Length: 215
Image (cartoon, rainbow, N blue to C red; front, side, top):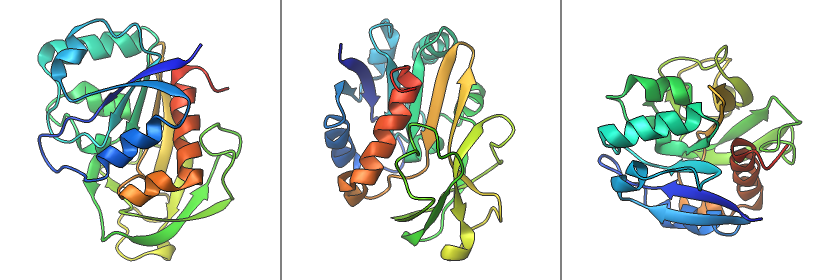
């Protein structure tokens, strides 16, 4: 049976012009995708979905009722995946920072750099080279998620200008929240990223892991 996911792309702050490309990519990955920007989607049962994906959301994007339902969904075993600016979302909701594992702090200019794969066995990273050349914004986070999350890949700050986290700079991680699974990737700023076969496989594996359909 096809894995059904809810892709949420509402923004109340910065809006990435790559969102349409991201949605188009999700639809190529073998998921049945329901896409919405309507916060009312979180005020109805989320049980039909194997995972909820926040794709470059920004700002406050959920109602109080939606927050409560999302929390109950994940704690009860639902999957959650955040892509790129999902880390710039729901600053007014403390639980969201716990759920995601870290919050966005800043980023340098968009530029090429290197991603170092830390876990070569996870579905999101097992297909990637040990050192993966990519172009992105190389997000810094307010706190290092290592310790509360399982880090899958880090940024090599020697490979680009303006990094602010030092030698241990997680970019991709996963964690458990209650009975649910959470996956986050900081990558995905530019539209062209979603045409990259390696990045598409990265999303497929990460979202599939959160959904419980990729071991």
